[in-house]
Image 1 (cartoon, rainbow, N blue to C red):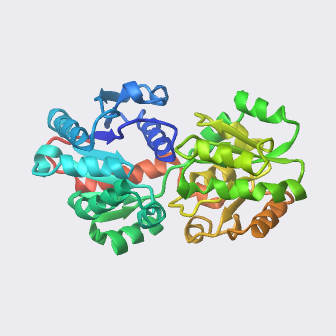
Image 2: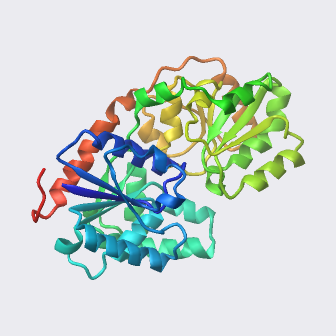
Image 3: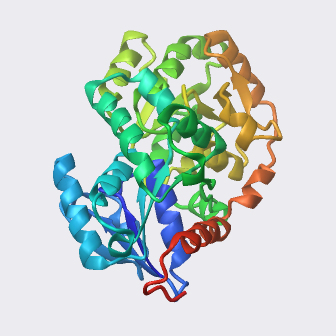
Length: 373
């Protein structure tokens, strides 16, 4: 089977970590020819792509939506994939539009992967661009052969709010490579050394600095955290459009000495392992790698109450809070007193298991024109 994976840029995000985990799992599968289609020149994490994965580079990073779809269409024609899988909402739209007017035998099977609860994201951020993306998802998602939803929460949202037929959907949880996470957590880390040099313990929040991740809530809680837990700092790992706003907010609230920004990190696991707790204040989560990464490293997790926790945390490992300062600080204080065992859910989302589900799905959808696997 020749399978392509498309993402315009490989950066530090959660979907990119999922993609890289799947690619690493494919290295020792000689019956699979794996190709990553991306912009290698603008991909900060291109060095993390394992050897044995073929790279097809096009200037997606600087291209308009239309240009991206035309570039991708040409790749489909030239490479003749059996299956092409796209990662992230905008990538799914590029692939869906690129495949228009091409029959399946020519373009191969097109599979998108949705990593967001789109109605929650678009409900929070009503920019003209997001309205166009929302319209595009409603119009084009149904044109693909299948959409992989990373949780039942995402799948139900696509059915109820984006008119995607359930027969076009498949739920496959993201892979989490526990052994790799544990190994990487032991590596030297300059950011961890810098945080420890402050002389205080800390809790950590890992994620893109964007409105739906809601890091400003944590910063607004910091005066009370500092009052009740004066030896505890907040470390924010990630980059994004709200960085300047969040940094200014720490100064406005006079907590800039207690909040540390590390920027985006290729390996945040030493910081997670060294923390007192992992905080997830997001207003929406579709799966939450942060929860599983924290659980894998034995860290307590405090999180805003969301529907997704009923699905991915049936054991009730997460300490939930409402979006109020009192509720958050109470959950954080409790987290500092408990020991955590890794969630048993991790047993079912090991990379080879998840990869097997991807390949099984592809095999069920593929046309038998030149596949040999």
